[in-house]
Amino acid sequence: MLALSRKKGEALMINNDIEITVLEIKGEQVKIGISAPKEVPVYRKEVYIQIQEANKEASSNVAGIEQLAGLFSK
Image (cartoon, rainbow, N blue to C red; front, side, top):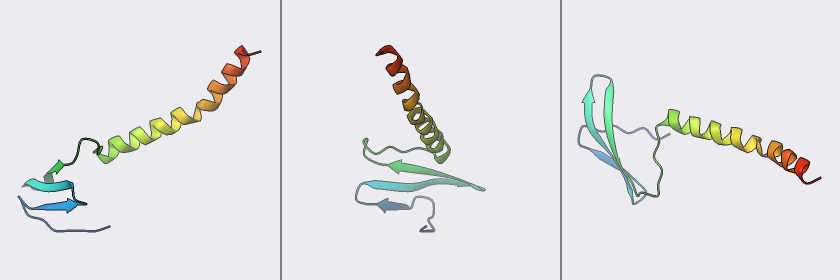
């Protein structure tokens, strides 16, 4: 993990097209702005984890769907 210090108004670049800017600092809370191309998904980590878990659950149900389809083909 790369750890950087930034002040309000300062930014960092990821690759050539993603910019992360520190917008505001209030106590222990930091507000950041992310500028990225529309095709680059940006999620809060807790939302990303929920999406991954839902995808994993959905993909594990594929076997059940195939078995169900097998019942109708007989």
